[in-house]
Length: 108
Image: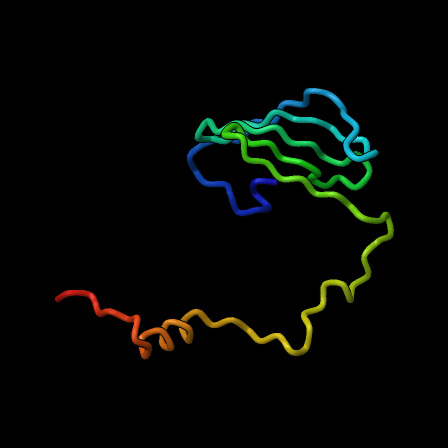
C-alpha cells in the first residue's frame, strides 16, 4: 500500500503485523499494526471481501474511516473526468499570481 501511494523511499522497510479480525460497520476486516521506516506507528483495518482500507488510526490520534455505501461494483464511467473539467497547469497559476498584487520578488 505504501508503494502504491508513493510513500516509499530508500530509508527502510515498512512492517505490517496482522493482529486479528474485527467487524467494522458490518464488514469483516483484518486488523494490522503498521510501522513506517521512520518508526511512525498506525493500526489499519482492511476489508476482507474488497481488500480495501476501511480505517486507519495513527499513533498521534489522527484517524480516518471509509464507509462503503453500497455493494455494487463501480462502472468505468464513475472514473471519467467530466467534460467541463480542464487540466491544471501549476506554471500557468504561478504566472497569474506573479501578475497579481500579492507577488513579491525574491530579494537580490
